[in-house]
Each structure stands twice: as C-alpha cells, then as structure tokens.
Image (cartoon, rainbow, N blue to C red; front, side, top):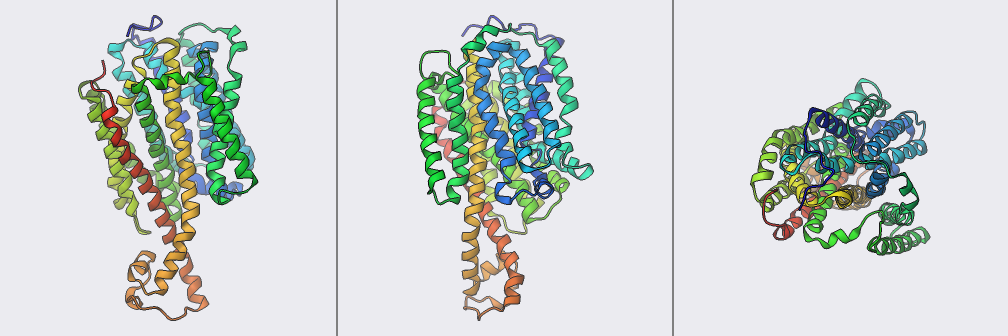
Length: 512
C-alpha cells in the first residue's frame, strides 16, 4: 500500500506537540465516560436520581458518542482534520460547563449527550492523525501513545473522579475540562494543518444515513434498558423493537450503496478489518463494562468513599503503564495472533476471577483480577488498531477509523445496558433463592449472607419473627446484589474467552 500523499513525513517537534495535544483532548473525552463512575452515589443523591435511571448518566454519553463517531468521516472532509478537532473539543468543553451547572437529572443528561457527541468526534480523529501525520515506519510510538491515552482514561476516571469529589464537589468532575480544553483547542488549531475545508460539501452530507443510524442506535439502547423491565412486552417495547429493526436494516442497506455515505460499510468485506472490528466491540464491552461494575460494587456493597474506590482501581492503570513499553515493542516484533490471544486471554482471566466475589471481597481480592485486565488491555488494542487502520489512506482511512472506534464504544454502550439489566433483574431472583436456602438451614447461604452458622445444619428453621426478618433483610439483599454482580462478571469473561475462537482468523504477521 502506498503512502498517503498528505502524510507528514517530518516528525517534527511541531507535529508531535500538536499530536500530543490531540491525545490529551481524547483522554479528556474518554475520561468523561467514567470520571463520574466512583461519584455516581453522590450525583444520585444531589440530583435525586432514581437508581433504575442512574446508568443514563453513562449511557447517554455513550449513545451520543457512537452516533457521532461514524459522522467524523464526512465532517473531516467538511472541516479538515485539525479544524474538526478544534470545533469538537471546544463544544465538549462548553458542554462540560453545562453539566456542572445542571440542577436536575434531565439537564445533566442533556449536556451529557452534547458532551458525548463532541467527544465521539474527537476520538477517531486522533487515530486518523496517527496515520496521516506520521510515515509508516514511525507509527508505532504514536499508536502506542494514543492507545495508552485511550485505555488509561477509563481506568483512571474513577480515581480522578473520587479525588475531585471528596476534595471539592461533583461539579468539578466537569469543570476541570474547561482549562485543558481551551489550551488543547489553541495548540491543535495552531499546529495541526492537514488538508483544507471543503465547505460546499455541507450540502452533500449524508443526513439520511445519520438519521437512520442515530435512530437505530438510540432505539437499541433504550430497548436494552426498558425491554427486560417490561418483560419484553407492551406498546413501548413493540414500537422500539419495530423501529430498531426497520431503521437498522434501512441504515445498513443505505450505507452499502457505492455512494458517499456517513460510513462505507463495504469495508467489512475486508476480512482483516471485519475480524479486528469484532475484537474492538468485545474490548469495549469488557473495558467499559468492568469500569462500570467495579465502582458500583465498591460503593454499594463495600460502602467505600469515591476516593477509596479510585485508590483501589488504580491497580489496573498502573499495570497498563507498566506493560505499555513491552506492548509497543511486541507489536512490531511478535505475530499479531499471539498478541491478540495473550491480551484477550489475560483480560478474560481478570473478568472471570471477579465472578466469585463475596460481600466481604475488597482490595486484596480485587488486586489480581485488575492486574490481569490491566496487563492485557494494550495487547488487545495495539495489534488490532494497527491491522484495522494501517492499510488504508485518505477517505478510506477516516472511514476505517470511525467504524473501528464506533465498534469499541458501541460495545461499551451495549455492555453497560446489559449489565444494568442483569443487576436489576437478577438481584430479586437471588433474594428469593437465598431466603429459601436460609429457611432450609443451608450453612453456605448463611456464610454468604454473613450470619452465624450455629443454627444452620441443613435442617429447616422454625418461623422467624418480624424483628429478625428486618435485621436480616439488608444482609440478604446485599448478598443477592453480589451474586448478580458475579453473574455480570462471568458473562463478560465468557465473552472474552469465546473471542479467542476467532484468533485463527487474525491475519498472520507483524506490523509493517
């Protein structure tokens, strides 16, 4: 494959400073997906958000992000790479101020949507910049840097968020974006000058594709959240399901036509891209799902403060930083199939190991699972990114970058929705089962709940008085919640384990 004629073959200080500024902005955008994770209980209390609606603080951001990501292909042509980035990071920063100023759930979700849309525009432009600003033989370092920023942000998010919430208030989770956002916009606007705007292209934007794709993704997310609550029945579920199916089929048919659409789905005919896109989807489910699950467990089950949650979760971030130089070297020298198998295998072990927690599991029990996930994440991301984007140029490159990043964030959005559903639906089931086991005198159930074992000998217990029931009920609910958490961890771990079956379809060879 020939070099992109617009590529900057001078890896000068100017280019590097501009690129690092872009990476910082991407870090902010991804960080904001999870910076609120460890502070969700505080936000819930401050804005009186019902528990079953709490995940929308995360999901609204992700939905907007996955809608914006594919649009970047055409917006890059309209604005040019650098100008699009500046507009997006400026919008992201202003929306952050709006989030901080919100006095209710509706306003917060509204500004989170704007944040997500602008953040979704920022992310693929950074990965596109790697292949536009740097020649092929110098792309490993910028790819690694972009990868570290991309995967470290969701891991450090709860830590940073916990510190900010305890030291100041939850409003500063968003206000901290303003200063860096202004700085990054100025630096990138000054130093990154790639291509020229094509303003007449505004009239050629694929508004039909955007409407169909946005409708499909939005209905899919709402359906995943509301369907299980309503027993997959009722007028709302039927309308969402029908709209989702019709808009999804129409969007795919529309984007498969040989025209200039929001994205060109014909790229999935390329086996290398199709396989790496699937892996990107799986990584998104595991990465964002795990960073959603763990702070919820630590906050709702272990009653940790936001800062304590962040300190516990720093293990994964430290592992990512430690493995980064090794992963960068291995990406150039080791067969990509080995790296993918190792990365997704380590991540699977880390997820499955979390699936056997008890209400008393804390830092020591969470250390090794986090270490495995942290060690595996860059080995998941670097080889797949190189294979997915390294062979494309020009408009095909921006299209590939948009779809590859879309798959990861779509996986995250769907993963969080499924996890939320499991926690809501499975917890009452486990409560009923635990009550039955305790009444039957099951010592294992008593040990899980945290009750003295001297009365539990697999012999049915006599009727329990109301005062004892009131005393034991919170313990049973907490244990049931933990069992639902465990099922969510195991589901994610099984998905990663199954993804290893696709390793033989990963192309042989190393980055060139």
